[in-house]
Picture (tube, rainbow, N blue to C red):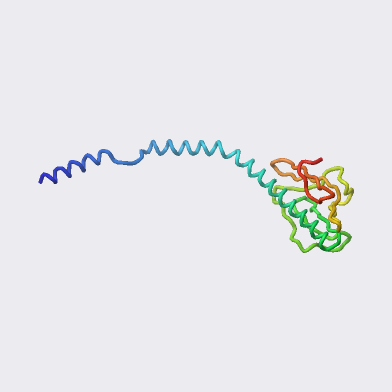
Length: 165
């Protein structure tokens, strides 16, 4: 019988010191998490927009390299043609030669491409890659909500250089 008394007594002592969190402690933790999220969330939005602009620039650079390669391999001029709104970029053969068998590049819903003022292409809206691996000297503007990125197409190497005039 003594054992039963000891066990019962230790059982009642254990009930007094139950393990867990109080409602007040949980509410304080939730308020801290919400406050931290409210502080961090605005900076994530601008970083996401900057990432979209960076991604658009990288994909455009890849398409420029592909256009130059196609021009050299096929030994004929290839034109990089942005759409009127600047969202789509496709490769064509100049002079009504049709389109290159490459899917058009979609820069995304917020990124737009346009040729910079004063480019050598004049009135035409295409960038020509020649069969010898060169291209016209063209300034490009890639814009989104994050800002504008100015790029220049290097005529000798037919590669995009960021930050040129």
